[in-house]
Image (cartoon, rainbow, N blue to C red; front, top):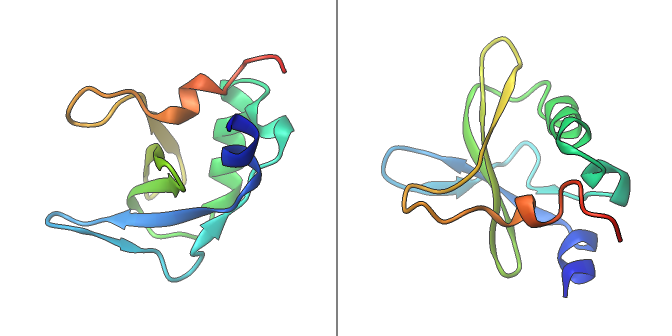
Length: 100
């Protein structure tokens, strides 16, 4: 199941105060195994991918649920969130830094 999650494109959702919508500029992101080598590689990939996006909160949705949430600043920095507002960890942390 892990392989299926990582190889399929994930939907990019832009978070708004009352709801989330699919991000029109880049509706899907696809990862490669090297992006999960460590936290730095994962964060760098997200930062490069979102370089021209507007600042705000986003999350990536896999087929089985929310994969990761991040905040993009005006300066282009990305802050990864460990868990959602209900203290449930995002799925990405199960894969980052794990050897296959």
